Length: 138
Image 1: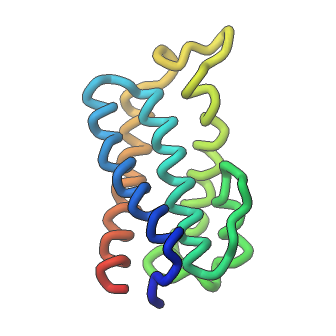
Image 2: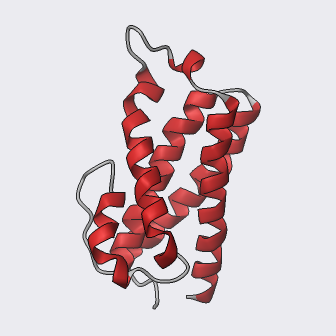
């Protein structure tokens, strides 16, 4: 499978940049920014993956759920990770607004931990590694 969709390629490029930046946020203890930017990165990756298989993603911030019905078309190495991608997409979508703006009773800079941020970074780094190989091979 060749990545022929220009927008999918752009999404993948944007994902890779965001995934790399997360470690800088972690170093600065900006854990809520890791969560927010991690969500955006995963959204871009997932929408790129959907476009690669000919699916026009919706404007949802949780495109992971859109992978589930078309999982048979998802190329390796992502085929085996569809459930994991969908679960992370759902989880990070829930934190999208709170990690950015907070709420009266939720101060983002106080609510997220280093461990939560590292978990997001590890997951996205593993996706990034798989994506780089995928791009190289296609």
